[in-house]
Image (cartoon, one colour):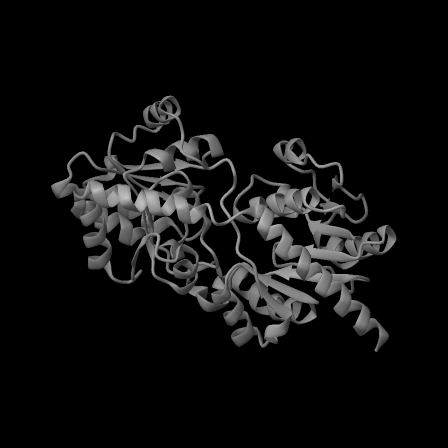
Length: 378
């Protein structure tokens, strides 16, 4: 089968969707004889081309209509038709206009539709206008959890037989770091010996103000505790940063910015507790990554995270500040509990793999291709 993936998420510094695209492409090629292309009208970041190892996986930068609005409408459909692509996979909420092949769309979450107050207005408007139409035109849809699958069915009116839930996984680079690596990173970021860790884009739906408020109270009984917030600055963050600047414990709150995988592994491996109090997620990879490195995890009890973590973490209601603070206090005071969660978490995270994800996605491609052929005959 000739398969093409949307490579635009690989043309900039990789975050969640970029890693999803890269891991999926690599494992699709490694586990089949399919010809897999990753297409982008923009240049790939250097780290991408160096990691696309399988010979049947090709990064391609077509020169037709590199302007993005023309790329989706003219350039990409023309390339797909010319190159004989059988399935195009839109990994970042986008599909080409009038493609001549089957299309698979990954809808990672519906946060712009269900929680518009946590996004910039122009992005909400764009999603409200384009996502329902794109979902309707896709041959098949992939969601990262059953929770999101049901949301897509309910809110976008897509029949369940056209939507498949396929779990993601922590990447292989996430495993317990060595003592030497940990010492280097703790010194670099000045984390101290005891710290809470959050990883992800800094944006309103991550509920970080609640975490900061809880941290302020925890410092009273744990004076050496620090809070490390790792990830790039997103949108609508002025309130959070203004509050932290005024906080009496502001010097104990560390914003690292974007962190490399090597440094991130050490942070996961050495944090006292990993905290993920998000209001809404489609999957939530950071808690699974943290578990893979042995971190005890406290996360939101929202449906998608509860589905993924499945009893291997302590779950709290995202709008229950006292529950969040109390749970963190309990773990900070109970080393045995932290060690138990660490062990259970590592075992749980090991059940997820990108190889298995790729196999299930390949099955969706086969269904999409068959559905496209039948529709063409009608």
